[in-house]
Structure formats: C-alpha cells, structure tokens
Amino acid sequence: MSILPEFLKIKKVPSVEWSSNRPINFTPRIKTLLFLILGLTIFGFGESLLIHSTIGVSPWTVLAEGISKNLNWSIGFATFICSVGVLMLWLPLKQQPGVGTILNILIIAGAIDLSLYFFDFSSDNFFINFIVCSVGVILVGLGSGIYLTANLGPGPRDGLMTGLQRVTKYPIAWVRVCLEVTVVTSGWILGGTVGLGTLLFAFGIGPAVALGLHLVTKLNR
Image (cartoon, rainbow, N blue to C red):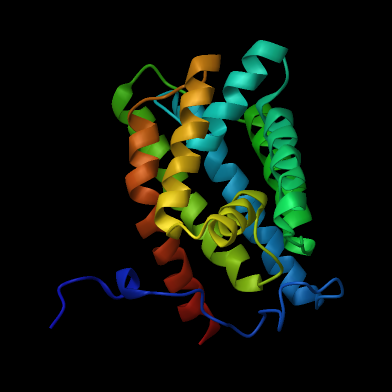
C-alpha cells in the first residue's frame, strides 16, 4: 500500500463536466469559460501573495519584478509583456494558442496588479510573511487545478515548454528546468526578489497543483 496521499498520485489533468472537448475551441460553454476565469483569477491572486510576502517569488515573477524595477512598470504590466513576448516565441515553434492562452495573459496580469493596489499583506514579521507566501503557493496550485481542467489551451509558458520539447526532443523535465533557471537568473540580475519563497514555490507548486486537480475532481462528483 502506498503511503502517498491520493492527490500526489495524479498523473494527468482530469476531464470534468465543464471541460472543453478540445483545447482549440473559440466558442466554449459559458460554464467552461467561468471556471477558466475563476482559476486564472485565483492563480493571479496567489502570485500577488508571494510578492506581498517579500521573501521571494516564483521564477517568472522574479523576471517580471526585475523588469518592473528597471522600466518603472507595474509588476502586472511587466508580467503581461513577458507573457506576450513568450507567446511570440510560439510562432517559430508552430504552437497554436487557445482562448485559455489569451485569457491567461490578461487575467493573471490584471489580478496581480489589482491585488497589489487594493491589498497589503506584507509584514515585518518573518513568520507572517512565510504564511502569506505559503498560502500564495497553495492558491496558485488551486487556480491551476481549476483553469487546467477547462482545457482551453495552455498558458504561454507551458506552450513554450511543450513546443521546445517537441523541437529539441529533450525530456520535458529538462526543458522546464532550463527555462526556469534561465528566467530566474535573468530576473535576479535585473533586481527581482529571489529567496526562500522562490524555493518554496519551486518545491511546493507541484504538490499544490496536484491538490488543486484533486479538489476540482472531488467537486465534480
């Protein structure tokens, strides 16, 4: 008998009642679209909590934060520009975006900026910041679990990962690691926040996404 929790055994994104039958679907059901938007909003809010924590953010947000500091942009707008730039890299890879891809770019960036503008969860207490960061990682995972089951196309970064894997033939794990290391190093050089939160995200996001998928599956029953 396995000692692993049930949610850590998930090997693929489950198909649920609101899932689209195909990822390239520009006329999805309203319910599918609503779950997609809900998931992306929760994802963006979770990312903002990592920023609020001040103890480190996810690799791609490290890059966005570094860019924002150098160009005096908001982190949300820098995230938007990064996402559009990544989407442009899809062209030579012949990747095709879906509704989920476009909304991923718009909603996550917007949710980050709105949260940073309206809320302030930062504290001088490291323990509180650690809790805020941990909740952020969990929310990013939960949001991922919701929007991935909509099956309306991958996010820009996931599409870049799968496209590079198809072209290079390297294992997807190696492709993702190379992408994340390149991004976090570039962001750190530009002044993005790398710290305990970055490590917490790196090691916690996998289980958090699996938990999100598990909870969504339970909700669908």
